[in-house]
Image 1 (cartoon, one colour):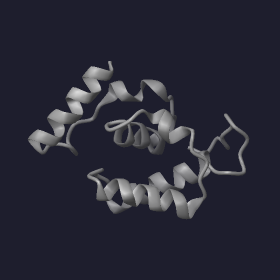
Image 2 (tube, one colour):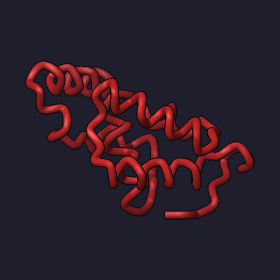
Image 3 (tube, one colour):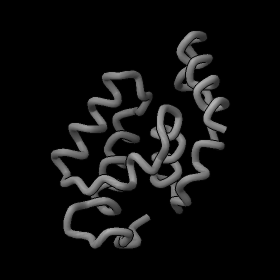
Length: 106
């Protein structure tokens, strides 16, 4: 599966279709519910394991900076998607939640 992900990511970069391919296989390591969770799995999971995202416990300024950095590196998110993703990440993966816990926000 890792070869498939790397090959698909390379193909996306080479063909310039990075924002048009939705890589559902990358969502296997996370089972987020709701539109924002799927957005995270589909957009973040294109380049790396969603475990890399879900193990983080960041506050709003750090999630915002991280998402903005990913956008500067080629992640394709509209301004509305960016805001929705940051809200989701702050709700689900913030410093005051115990390891493995989420607040259930969708």
